[in-house]
Amino acid sequence: MKYLSRPEEMILLAVSRLKQDAYGVSIRKLVQKWTGKYWSIGAIYVPLERLERKGFVTSTTSAPTPERGGRKKRIFKITRSGVQELEKIRQVNSAMWEGYPETAGEKD
Image 1 (cartoon, rainbow, N blue to C red):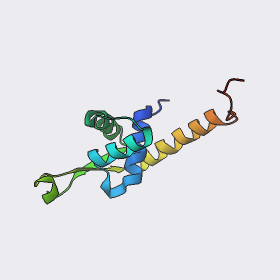
Image 2 (cartoon, rainbow, N blue to C red):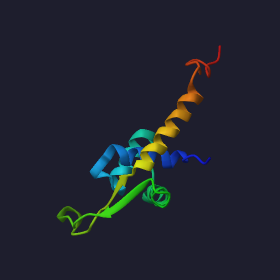
Image 3 (spheres, rainbow, N blue to C red):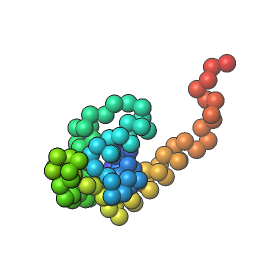
Image 4 (cartoon, rainbow, N blue to C red):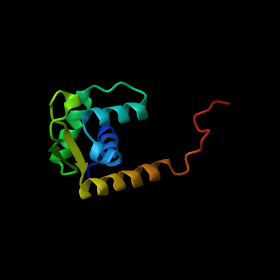
């Protein structure tokens, strides 16, 4: 069984949360907010392409918008398989962290 990579997990979760506003720049902003780190737009689109090939997201092109100089946006949407995959990874993460004491990394 293969699991999502950590970037794929974060990006898929961002797509799920952003709903109809899930496009490259908005996804990047949310992931940067969560991690506190800079993410290049390529670091967002490469995993999005993988997620689409795996069937976890689909994409459509929006109508041109004036605020983007007439350019279209590529909007991503999580699929039922994507939701199921997020639930699997959530269960794995919960199992891994269960019983881990809050002070385990502290020195005496």
